[in-house]
Length: 357
Image: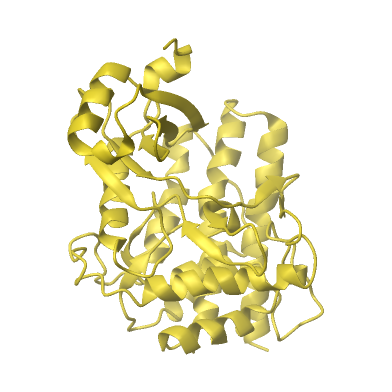
């Protein structure tokens, strides 16, 4: 078949067909048809059709960023390990570590049907009927059901004992993200700037780090854009996707990230500016009580995880400001992300003040 240039960079039909014959015969034996599903900076996804069930191939992009080959294999490992658990995820059908087959390592996974949130003008959009009450209210509970299932998995029992470094995981968080922020100077020639709330947040996190926690599997990038929901109501999650940042750490960090844009019961009439459109969602405390009921985890220190999420967000997103200052991004993009960074640290400081009232 004639492939466009982008597909030719990602897939080599003849060697891939031979590999599929040997490793995934259930896909069929007809001519292999491929289509580009997604081609982003961190990965590319290509559909595979041989006349039977359609599967998808996930691999690094044609020009891979550093570490992307290792990341793809880590994703394949965790998805394979999760088979047999009740965590909603795409089933991994096969893994190829040999770059000579198509030019990079890859894995083949189930094509899961469902909808994901789309971000338009920095706000999540949901399809009907989930774009309105009462069905929108159920979305965060469906997400939390999946995170409860993930937190309850015994990662050692499914072969992921060496998948991460859970020791002193929380104690390392502030240093990790603060060091990343400070590193933008050398990486981008960025002079830096005053970030109100950053130092207070950093000091508070260091002083209030929980001293013990129950290690578990973290997805690492929780949001309704990284999920596939059932098309019919009520909201149910078919699969968590995009496992690039998965590790063994503290699963409550996923919950802190997910709920950081939700309303707080200490000021219930304040609706935070959030990509997730959380005005029609329950409060973060209600979602955390639901999570605790499903996992038995102690949520007494949950404010720490929400504040850490805002601190992490501010530290990460400042790289966009640094790139704009260097001229590799437009001033408009830099200004936009500058606002997000300042809001992240301002939100963290506000919550600290709220706690200390």
